[in-house]
Image (cartoon, rainbow, N blue to C red):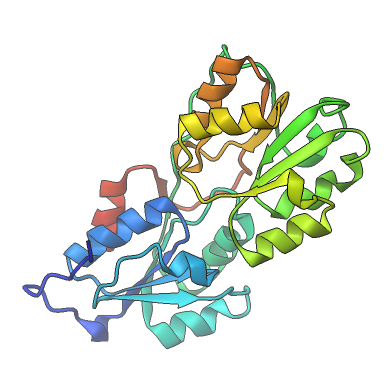
Length: 265
């Protein structure tokens, strides 16, 4: 159903707009709430495919592209940004750090929406690591059939392991992800392109199909399917290795969407 802005509260364009750093499931929820109150907002995403996640509304503008630290001040000036809501992915560290730096420089209010971290589960086999590099100094992957559900960017780190393990990767159905996976040495029979959410039934079927013995994921929370992977790993008795979220010092953050909406108002 297409979202529509309420006509009872006119948008005050002279007052400026919010900048919502999007591309996540939560950012979609935030835009729906914003649209219902006719709050002027520009949502930034990095790919054209991400644009389709958002319901059209007259008070929302979807901006597609990547912004460097040097480009952000000009972007803020051109778009007349008055406040920033950062709902980017928990592992998009550079995006958040750049937004924080410019917000502090220009004295613009900034709020980080940080999706909740799932509590630890002692029933799950495996271990958590602070980084991919820390994991790859161990022999966890040696001679195993490994499923990587970590996105396309870290796949290059595993390139040297193709001779020591049987690696499979699940990536988003995008050209850039497919090209990155191919360059990292993954052949078509070791790749599957799917856009979340992925059901428990499908997850089970995929792990069975590839006879997976070890799964590597990011601690990206429920929106990233971490809860489903935990459930399937427990059911099958397969070790699940999680890469912890990077530590970022946010000046202001919340995991409550109602707090985000109050900030937007």
